[in-house]
Image (cartoon, rainbow, N blue to C red):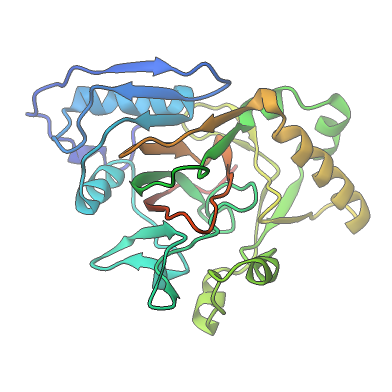
Length: 299
């Protein structure tokens, strides 16, 4: 296991906390119980969290009464943070925090209300996609608002042999704009992009099957949201293969459905999972704060 770039910032003199890491009854995920992220983490406690994140891919920290600044600080211990291209939805005073919300105030959305509408891995459309994302619940609806996660290591391990032969060693194009116009037509939360914003999200090419830089495990790395084509295949064959891979990846036996509780903080590994927002009724308010940690060049 390698060490996150910023783990040197660990507070080695901090007293260890007593907490448990409880695997979920699901194909991925674990619950972290008893840990207070508002308190400094010792090196040993941070190492336990890091190891659990690699082992379980999704960590659920319960009842975290932390500020946005504390979320940013904890996130930075895993690496540099990435600022979302829709920076108009950044939290005031904290450009690293993206507001994920369906709330409209004074006729304007305060956040990105349709985030996660399609299955995806965060920022796969960047040259250095995200290592992981943290989402901290601020205001939750009385119904809806769940988040689904799909284990892409398991999806690769169970991929039918004929698809394995086709995709192994291939590369795929990812672009933020792949379904942007479609989302604009569906919801009021997608503004027109400026020329500067479009320049930030030029298409990139990544391996269809990537090797996790810390564990060495293989995972599928394509999504219905951002992946447009497999570059070595014809358009028709690429479309057929991607559709089959997408459908396989999100089979029920690969997935965990997170039902949010008040003040949950969820930290997932974008190198290992895809996620999907299950949707919230528009008449119910939902607001969460997201930070995103930069990862490595996929190989």
